[in-house]
Image 1 (spheres, one colour):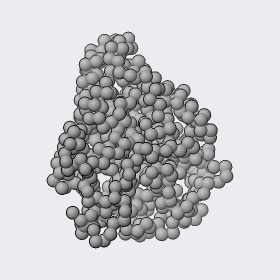
Image 2 (cartoon, one colour; image 1 turned 180 degrees about the vertical axis):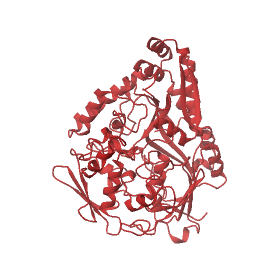
Image 3 (tube, helix red, strand yellow; image 1 turned 90 degrees about the vertical axis):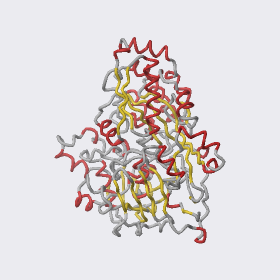
Image 4 (tube, helix red, strand yellow; image 1 turned 30 degrees about the horizontal axis):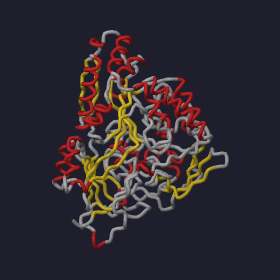
Length: 556
């Protein structure tokens, strides 16, 4: 994932990862008393940029999940320590002895924001919709394709050419609702990790009558039509400015203390930081340039929340275009970037260099596998020359989101490539929506992308590099990699499974599917009056945004 990381997939289990060492203790988690609460229970945060969509079936980036996780609730929900998935819209679930059938019981008091009951049929429709090629849902593969029984043909169906086949395909999926309070999922193969999939926001229900009334591309664009089932609902959608959330009074789990969440869309880190200092924001990501200043400020240093993240960034090469259709060229570009200088000088020590793919904190963390991408500018230039000829004749369009940190990182990488390889790099700095459009159309050469864990299992990471995945845009494809990952995904023996994943990671690194760069940590400032903040290593855009319902605002 980039700073708007395509983050929507968490990890599945057999070998469940312990990530306690990465977690920051919740701040002020004791229940607030009425006497110490502020009269105005408004939380003001920054999601950096405008979401492309708030449709659970279309959300892909962290700035979308930052809102989506509060307004749309899946069957289950991650626990703050990432140890398990707890009941949410489903009160309980059971798994058949062969591991193929998962039966979820919907809460009797689970309701939509308009008061109508949530039913098993709502989940059937929502999940079928994600697997409808006409929606082109970014998270269909591999969450459901390759997991749900009957979904194997998803990747081969064309939305236009195969339109007549789609209804039969959808009705043949292993999804059913025997009654209003039951949702049954049949899997292609035993998948102990499936509980994590059932906890993802994109697994939330969607109302067919609402989509039919307003249209598949319009229903989620207005507070009036955006009917959801989460603890909050949208009350305002002001394009390129803010999204306001208020409590869903029909939510089964009771009412939160915070009665309004204003999600501002401020792409300039310095502007957001100034608003925090002026008391206009309650949380802010510390601008890179202000890192030392904040650490040494007698007041601000006490407001720091440092949260390591299961998030890793890389150079995303468009392998459909020269020179990145050449493995040696990709390796050359990767070896031309000094990651130590990047993390020290640009990221101000708030991230760790990475030539590996699986981040620290996961079972598959193997820093020793990344040697082939180590910084070596001389070898890189020689390698590039041998692969494609004179580097000075190569021009690369480098796509960069118009966000302060992204631009700083982009400038550093462009300079490294031009200096160490002798290529020309055009920095194309544009708004996030246009970047996303160009990525999906494969209209780019180079981009800094990344991934943030959706759940704590290595599978969540490896599947994104599978041939045809919608989560890495560069078109990377390697049959040997695919075979290793498919084998590991269904392996019940933990050691054999990890061995297969390790082989796949080494192959991916040596093949330079991506030029791996750094693992991110969050450094935020949070006002002392924000109580009950519950952070995880998988927060989206603001620390604690998985669990806004636990927050309160104290008198100040």
